[in-house]
Image (tube, rainbow, N blue to C red):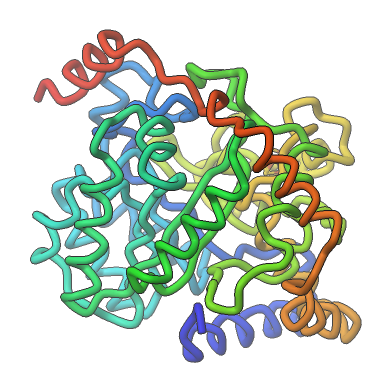
Length: 378
Ligand code: SF4
């Protein structure tokens, strides 16, 4: 089972409570970004292009706890930047665990092994390790040779020490679905608890603009990866979100489902866009023109978006919104993995095309190194 029963129960009872209270819009996971600084410079990242003084800014533990209490979600995801670069991250995580929040600390795991002793294993804490595919693909994607092996070492050390470990994988155009399926086998063999998948978002600041996926291509890719899936694969995502990725279910974006708090405040409207900031969670919910966002709004910035932070909460909301939603989720859980002839053809097509030439191209090494040195210059 990819998620412990106690966590499933907490989330299900939280969502049902929101429904009984008649709340049309409610948050499910707080995206808590305590810093933008990172020790990688990935080609598809839209976060690390800030000027150096912003990259050096951090949220304090007190600011993090205040944000968590304001929005009241049962789960907190800590992306970044690289959270392990924050000197008070162990204190922040311990404070969230003490508040009984299920924490997913996202990390590229380059520092995981050496910082592991600063954390305590808990059912509330999971390291969510960023791995974009098999060794060669991941190293291209994060622009760092050897990054995969270091991350894998970190995962093994964390599992051996009794921590929960999940993975998060972002896919771009040109991804070989056969390689992703082999990658799933590798992760399951290592013993990770569950895997999360998402297409990349078309960040206009990202150095590589050529490899973001459009909606049709995303669906084709995810259908070829997730159909005919092995029963050994465990996913850390709602069944409805996975149906959505495969093009078998339409969902509308619920950007309020995963609100973002970072060094600028509460970000409008979502983790990906920056249309201003609110001083409080209440202000974010009241002052954001939610109708201006989501694919159906016609907003060009949302046109191709199928990203986890916009649609995972939509999937959970759909499941608990009606008996029909619940039954469709059960059906998707039980049957979506089975034979899909179209997906098999896609896999065969890809296999014969040998498109290994289409891996994400990395930024020039000199440029990246300069950027990292500048950021790490303290
Ligand atoms: S569709 Fe994507 S970019 Fe647009 S509001 Fe939703 S999550 Fe944000």
